[in-house]
Length: 455
Image 1 (tube, one colour):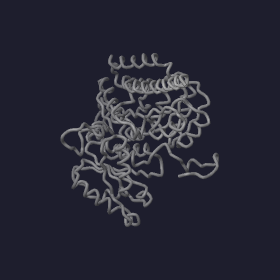
Image 2: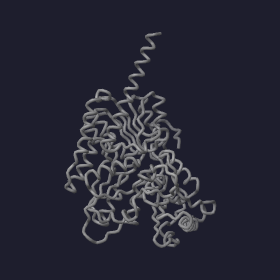
Image 3: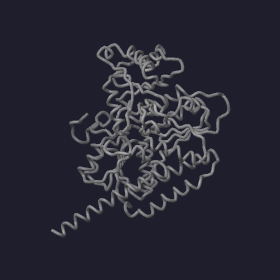
Image 4: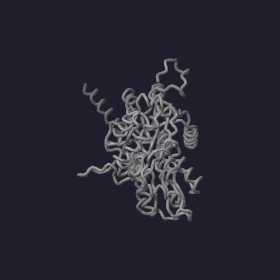
């Protein structure tokens, strides 16, 4: 929505220009793909489902499958109960998933379909499951939808066996790429701790190309694993906005201790992730992880003069932005503008604390912001680097500022879903990208100066 009113009188709670977010159903659909044998179901029109599938497919470069209730004019007037019941019957008969994960769209939310009551009346085959979450697109963001679907996994599937808690860990990884989930699993495995990670899109949206098509790849958290999460001793929730709700529900219903942490992006956040597991389970940190950490420290020392004191603008999903802000502060950079499109007062509080602890003043911070406002800030006082999603390229191009693409969506670069930004390996990748961005700018400027001298 464009606000045709003077600057300063715009109500940014109702109008946005290029919001730094997308809608709830996309997040819910992505979370559902992290369950093994799951077919996400969009309760609304075919157009909504097609857009959400397309957006995820463009980011992950892998086909995203989902079904739709296929609303027509009749459903728009009389409600979509009949459509959903028919959809459930047809999906299980034709595509035979282990589980359907239903999320709603603006249309069904506006109508007010009573999804739980509809599911009670639906024909669900023996041994199959249907879960649901309400995801009105006009509230929250894709992170809100992701969080809601993960919470629904706990609400519908988690089940305690009534015995003592098992010596195992739940990890809710947040809205991250399959490569990040794979790296999180590797770190926990290196620590020698048994884990259940859900959702888990590794081996689902980064599955290898083989000679045989599999509609439901091998990856994803199984229904049995999600059910057993109620028997774990602790849950690590990575990223407050995407993961805390599900962890809180596990603690409230089943007494599984919740440990909220930042996404392990950057040195401090990765240290905290590893130490939380070490302290809870009493395990030793293996030499392999200590070596990786030492390599990060060594690289930071070797490259600090590339980025020391440089000003940076960071935007994107709140959990990513909070962790990235902490990391660039560790690197000696100055986060000048920090913005997310997702609403939530906690974002401002966490960023302000990071800035205060680092002695940084004069930075602008905003939740539920948009890229139009970010561009205005940069035009008033420029920065040396932008970190964010693909949509930052328009600002980067207009103001001639390097852009490091991190988060969702990244639509104009390849391979990124397989390459982690979490953990110590993710630290090295981010340092490489940031350092090289400044080196390329320096080399370009030197070439321009040499050309002018020749002329």
